[in-house]
Image (cartoon, rainbow, N blue to C red; front, side, top):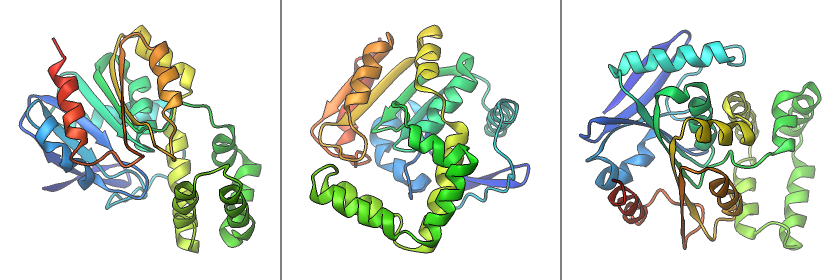
Length: 270
């Protein structure tokens, strides 16, 4: 069942499933919506009450804020949403792909209330200077606006990168599919900027997870051409309370097969 949470000028759409007593808030990937996590009802539904939200500028969420979220805003949003859900205990978070930035951002903002963190093929474990340049600097935003009007140079560069083997063909196809219309390019900028508002530095994430000893589960694909598992290996090695599971798949891990890995993780708990 779909529900809405009204916060300031925004309407956040979300779905719930599962009968467990522990709350798990899940954040989906680029171009997806809250329905994608229902594939995990078999594995997560018994332990968790899963609340999957539509991210800003995606799904049915209407994001009406006109300024970048600061720490005070973020804390207020988290607290108000938990009150709306009627939840007073600790909460777990799950982030897939770009949703990893939101899961990490919320963890850093409110570490004292986080029980567990799940990162599945999640973004946010590497420093991306170009990403921050585009979304957080005046020059970067100007250049991206130019790109929205004329993407030919970027598309040409992607094609060359694919031919030279710098990027896998699947990766080139994925990136091109997100910028092949003017509307998609505008959406890309809004979604990236929203993600940049939330995403913490890798070192900050690592320090918070270690400092608060937050149990962190990482599931990444060995054949992922969108988000490499190598950063996850390095990150997991630096977080004492983490466990890493590498599966013989690509980036698309929101599939029934992943339930088996989740069940292994849940079964290994004390």
